[in-house]
View 1: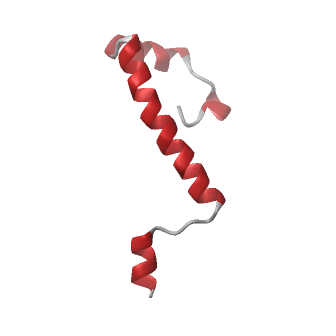
View 2 (view 1 turned 90 degrees about the horizontal axis):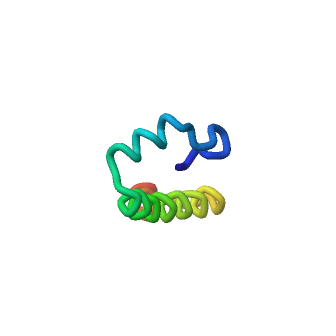
Length: 58
């Protein structure tokens, strides 16, 4: 889900997911992946530093 720009959605990966999860479960798993990926992009884009790392540097 996070490397679609490079690899698209290979059929073998899709088939493996379909063998393990129902369509509803696949959708339920996709939402958190999208959320995490989105937050990662925001943090990288703004060169964010985790608060724990900030405390350790101080």
